[in-house]
Image (cartoon, rainbow, N blue to C red; front, side):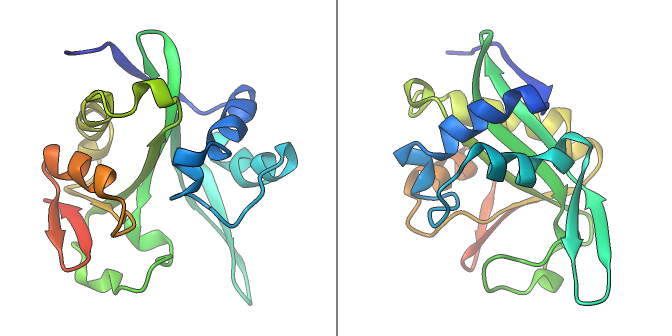
Length: 172
């Protein structure tokens, strides 16, 4: 069943919605499980995303790299969060070598925050639309790195065309 899926650029007005979502059990299990989110922490993490970048601090400098963040909307209901960025701009959170990935490679992070929309095919439809509308207009490949035990997410990725590479999943 096809739904009307759209994407809205992330704005500060979405921060309380993000806070609600990242504190729900089905998200927290896979997304920043060790953080007790507060409105202040949400603002600190996402305020630059609203402006289109993520700030990284190294020992010697501060670097700002593009970050494209959106709210997923299904039939006029905000249901989730999705972002993409150049995979090579940021160090991996997991232990793998990003040098093995293609040069033109976006990384995708996302979730369906509204539990009523989980397991109904909305996620795979939303991800497929997002990849074609945004990501593949800029990058030739897309990369995701779900937890190995996150079987539901892996099924969605495979459904929209991602292939497993070792313990890494990439779509070519």
